[in-house]
Image 1 (cartoon, helix red, strand yellow):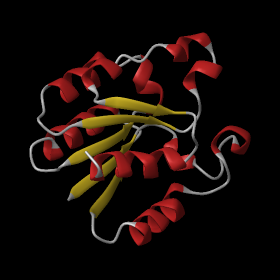
Image 2 (cartoon, one colour):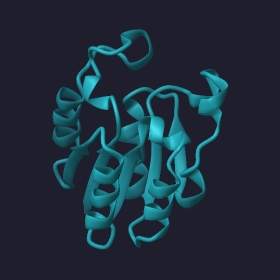
Image 3 (cartoon, one colour):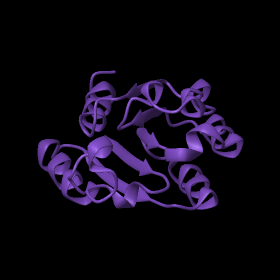
Image 4 (cartoon, one colour):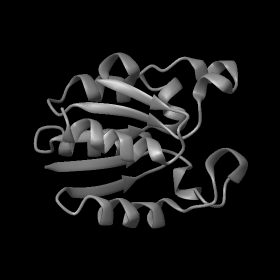
Length: 139
């Protein structure tokens, strides 16, 4: 099974940025833990702060991977283009958020991409990515 985690803007700052919301572990360190937990999966990771680069990556993997875990960060609430990119591919996408977007500012309560995703995990910290992998393994 081939799964990619795609993280959007500011998620490169995990471990440094607002640890009270996002924790103190870098995503790179967490990703190594995921790879060790799931050695049977071809697991890859991509992060960009640029909307167009995220769209290009979704297009690139959207017909050859088995699953995408997408944390679009702030683009979740603003990007019709990312939503359209998800709609245009065959690979299923699961939306993941580290924080509970419904316990934050009101503008974060609306996800533009959700309607194109198979589901959403929100508010379970980095554990949400692991649960997303388990979802696809048991699907």
